[in-house]
Length: 175
Image (cartoon, rainbow, N blue to C red; front, side):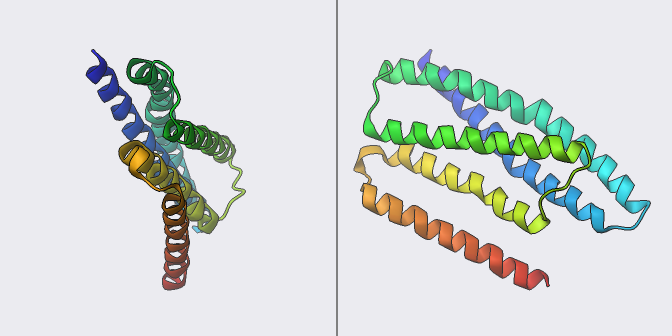
C-alpha cells in the first residue's frame, strides 16, 4: 500500500509544480497583453483569463490539496511522524512553498479583476522562486543525510545567483 501512496504523493507534487510554473508564464503573457492595441488586448486577455482560471482551479489547486493530504500520509507510513533533521528542513521549505503558492493565489485574484501590480520582468523573477524550492526539496529528499549542510547552502546560493544572472542576461537580450 505505501508505494502507491508515495507514488500518488509524487504525482500530485509534479502536477502542482507544473501548475505553478505555467501559471506565472500565463500571468506574464496576460500582463504583456496590456501593451497591445485594442482589440488584440481584449482578445488576448480574455483567452489568458480562461486559461489561467482552468489551470489554477482545475489542476494547480487540486494538486496542492492532494499533495497536502498525501504528504503527511507518506510521513506517517515511512517515518511514523518521526522528524529526522533533513525532513525538518524539507518541511520548512514546504511551508515556504505553500506561502509562495498563496502569493500566486493573490496574483491570480488581482489579474482576474484586471489589476496588474507586477511587471512582466518581476513576474519572470518570481517564477524562478518555485525552481529554487524544487531544487532544495528534491536535493534534501534524495541526498538526505549524505549531504553537507554547508555545501548544500552554498550550492543553493550559487544556483540562485546563477538563476538571477540568467534572468538579467535574458532581459538584456530582449531589449
